[in-house]
Image 1 (spheres, rainbow, N blue to C red):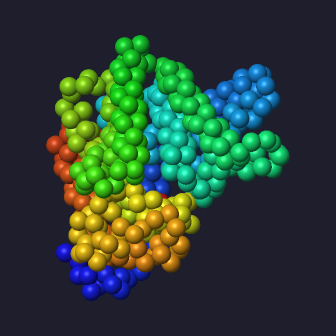
Image 2 (image 1 turned 180 degrees about the vertical axis):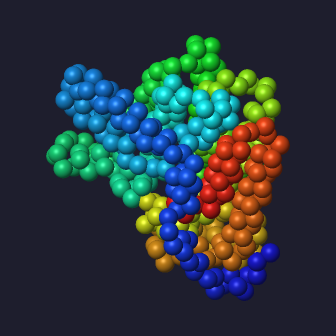
Length: 384
């Protein structure tokens, strides 16, 4: 347990920054996806152009609304979810299978991701995403500039909810365009629906935990990581890809993907917990310290409270939305002084090892195994 004497003068832990070069996830994606990301971007751009034109015909304002949603989808990102789905599909269908028939289904995951991000930003009252104003903030700014009646912030939140809803519908529509046998598309749809249900369940637990921090536990914090992030970031896309490739639910490959996906997905969220406190905003695109201000019971903060001595715990409990930058830096140092950061790093390493062990016993082409190995390691070591 950390020493309260140390906690009384807690160090201000340095922001996590790369020693040089790009984020490792970016490098791994470039190495293992070849033309996939470009193909996904082209598929999304073509699909969204038609959708925006269709809504513009209803009303010019609808076209502008749809264009805002389109721009959020195409604003960038690593396209991690289509990438995991792609390798899940490759592992099932083989490395020589044709990509175009499944491209709509892979690309649909980015629309699902945009839905989740936009709604999450509203729930968290976040100001920035990928270094730009979040959807609800940007719409509120436009409301003010146009001199409209009503509360700009309330309008921004309402429109952002609708943007997320539209992206969710678009995801369904794009998925249906996959050129697959109807039975396989139906099986894929069942996997997709389960992934969405688990994502909503995880998000609800995340919101609940922020409002019931005193009743939360480390186990429940890990459950949030499992359902909010692992389910639709790694595990769900892998299983989705496997169904696209025609693998049945009882296949040994599904068991391997389930183990691997859960482990890597949890490691991904645990890294997010660290970046939420110690990440460089210039790289993450989000301010550091929001979790400290909100008191969100992440695994990192739950561990800090478990490991803290009485004085440290009292100071942790005084955290709140009124923390200024100096207060955030002091509290971040206090969390590190408890030993929680080191413990989370250990948990990340353990999960990467578990993921690689799952790959060791899977019947996979070596190209697929190599890609999933690299993605597991890079996802756990990323800077953004």
